[in-house]
Figure 1 (cartoon, rainbow, N blue to C red):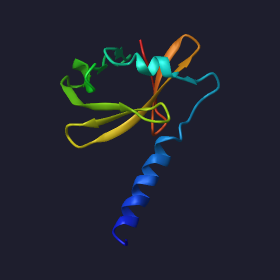
Figure 2 (figure 1 turned 90 degrees about the horizontal axis):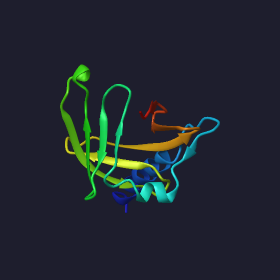
Figure 3 (figure 1 turned 60 degrees about the horizontal axis):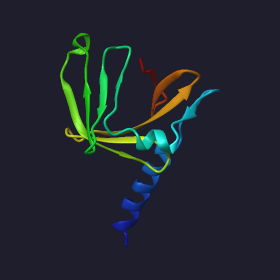
Length: 118
């Protein structure tokens, strides 16, 4: 029991962190239909990077040449709070939230960073 409790607390803390998003007035998280349409879509950002959500759960982020180029690979899933969680092949993991604000689509990271989509 002593070994299970710390694991449970870590998992519970991670779930709580994934659900606390810093939204601004006008931010509307993607609705279920938009989340279900995610497989096969790509999002291009103003820094030239591009996220691709494969139909088979594979994720890739390709950096712009100005940011060193290359591609980070992983798998993604849609969390219960509507965020998109990626487990990268290098062991790193994170969740992001896509929102609409007016005519813009914006990716919000768990840290509150905002990246508008082109």
